[in-house]
Structures are given as C-alpha cells and as structure tokens.
Image 1 (cartoon, rainbow, N blue to C red):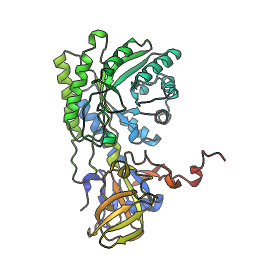
Image 2 (cartoon, rainbow, N blue to C red):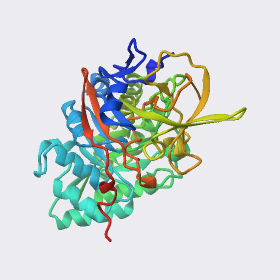
Image 3 (cartoon, rainbow, N blue to C red):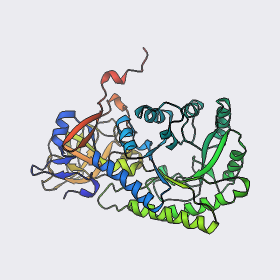
Length: 442
C-alpha cells in the first residue's frame, strides 16, 4: 500500500504504477536528471510555510517564522521561502552569504535583514564581522567568549548589535541523544541551572555595544511531544522576569524549532496547529501571570518545512541474496547523500517508484554504494521482487540529507530538482569529477 502520509502533498501513483511528484513521473525525472536525484515538491514547501505562518499568527499576530537553514538552503529555495514571508535562521557565514546573495540584499539596513537570526555555539570572528557588516537583525549569542568578542567587534565597527541569549532550560525532549540540545549536558547555550544564564544576562546588559532584547532556547529535534515546549516556555519566561528591574526588556522570545515530521507510516507527530497552540498559550498565560508584556514570538522550523517535500530517487544495481539471512539491494547512492541512518539510526519508508502497484512480497535491506558496512539506507523493508535498473524512492528526504551530504569515496553529490504542475527545474546540478578537485592544489 502506498504510504501517502510520508510523501509530498502532490504525490500519487499513476495507472502505470509510477510515483508522480508535482505532476512529474519518477521514471521521467530519473531519465532526465540521472540518479541519485533529490526531488522537491514546490507545492508542499509553500503549503508548509503557509501553515506555520497562519497557525502561529492567527493565535498571536506578533509571531514570526524564521526558516532553519541548516535543514537545507540554496539560492532557489531562499527566494521561494522569502516569497512565502519567512525570515531566516542561519548558523554559519556560508548560510548567511547564501541567503543575502540569493535575495540580492547586501546593502546595510535593508528591512529584510531584520529577520535574519545568526545562531551557532562557536561563531568565528570572521563570521561575526560579516554579520555586523551586513547589519543583520539578530545575533543569538551562545557563550561568554562570543559575548566579549561580539561586543568588541561591534565597538570597532561603530555599531550596536541586537542580540538574543541562547539559554538551556534543562528540559529533556526525549529525542535522539545526538539531537538533544536543551539539557544541562549540552554544548549549546547558557545553562539556567548552573547560574551561567543569569551571569550572561548581566554581562550582556552591561555590554556597551550590544542590545539584549530577548531569549532563545532550542530543545532538540525532532520533538514529538508537546509538553516539553510548554514546560520550557514557562521556565524561560519566569527566568526572564527575574531581571526586569535590572533592565531586561523582553522584546523577542524564541522556543526555537525541532518540530517533528513522520518518517514512517506508524509515526504521528503533532500538527503545526498543536505546536502553535501549546507554545502560544504557554507564553501568553505565563506573561499574564507575571504581569509581563508579551514579547514578539519567533519560531524556527526547518525539517518540518523542507523534509516532507523531498524524495530521493535511486536506481537498483547489485543484488545479493544470502539464503536464510538477508537480501541486499544495492543502490547508486547511500550515506554520501543521506548520512542519517548511519548517524542517527534514522528509519525510512521505501517505495518501488516504477513498480508501486506490484505486490510487496520480499523483505530486503537497501544498501548504499559506499565502502562502509554501516552504509544501509533501510533494513528489512517489504518491496516487490526487483531487478537491476528498477527505481526506489525514499520520502521525507528534503531535510539534512542534502545539507549533510559528502564526497566520501570521491563520489559527486546528486542534483536537486524542484517539481510543480507537471514541470521540473534544476536548482542544483550534479557535481562533476572536476568539481571534486576544484579546491585541490598540486
């Protein structure tokens, strides 16, 4: 049965048994662009953007949605997201440059840059100088080192930079240990429990070249529970209220992102409406209880916008059947374009993209082409009997797969295609062998 819930909104199976995305049949896409290829459904991206904006702003008009670029960003996507009214959460100088250049911004003080938020636990002096040069709206300060460095750099540039402090509320969101960021034992943020957050607030208020205007936290990703957001929101706002008499005017508040999506048919993440209701109600109720003017709210979805829009297409190559043990279907991609199964033990659905109407009669493991035994995209999945040359589709591949892709074994990274209304366009070409040595010096 076609697991429609984990595929893009426009996905369907045509009478020939071919997966269709954005009106484009998978075999046609594979023939035109080769495999592996990542296909993004434009309608799904726009619908997810609209959902976040409408669900949060209908409950709280002073809400802003900033896309978490680490999930994946490139110029075409940046322009699309901007069209949908989103700001940007960047975590490196490269992400910042991509956003600024894509939107053709570069001039200091342009209003669009007011909604760029620069995150990261160890921003370099060069990155902070670039942020100041671009006059971006917000730097989310993550350490005492950064507080001192940014204050000095802003002074040298003759500027005053608006900042948020990233605090760690000590709340466990019950996600994978590698993607849990809001607990005490984390490299991110100023811990409230240890007193470091309080010290950071006082230092930031005293910094002559910084304007402390709010607090940020991020619990981790993907977070399938609502209660951690409620508890952390209340805790951080009550923490902020302790510093009102010392001069902290909470103008912005951000609970980050981490909103979950379903990777497999048995997963049921909360809806965007449920996340919005939980966060907004917790924020407004706590502010009312504290007699605090509610601040502007900033949420930072990434995976939950781009993840469900993406489908990776692979072509089956070698098949190895070990009787009574396992049957391996090897494909022409793997951990080089999707490290998540090896890194996080992530699980995916797999569909025979050119034989989707055939009966599922074989249990197989999908192996990548990379020289690692752990290069497995999916284990023990049910598929029709397949042959070399058949196509496989892995859904929910838009987030973190392309952005964490590598050239391991010197394999070129795959292209990315945007599909809509029966037409497709390339938004990132396949790398060439020449690309692989472009930066090498002999």
